Length: 124
Image (cartoon, rainbow, N blue to C red; front, side, top):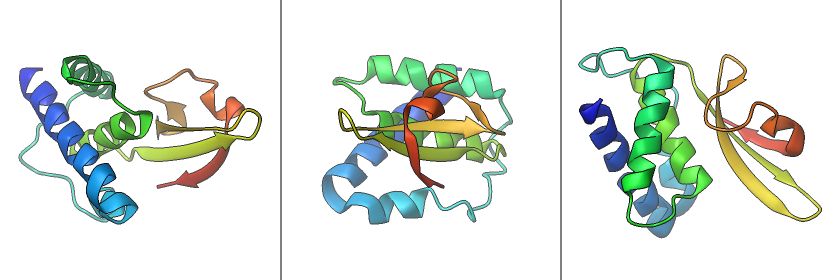
């Protein structure tokens, strides 16, 4: 579990850097689903990967954005050969945007009904 938490922390750093410096182009590159999974990573249960990301977020020195958390989770799930999808949605009144992760149509890092609250804008 310690290794997963460290990987999650590194991914939070990488994602924050992308958000601060090079915006969505770099995020699209690291989320590219055509990248093959890392064969050196052992396959962990999706719930365990989610727990590792949650622990990493509590260890992070500032508040973690939903996009940052979701990107880190998608990458870790994909490294472990799970076909995770990042979903970005928005609602109009009041305007809010939100990001979450789905695996086989099931929400992994939020409430199960989050898709009912936000209109889906992007899935990758």
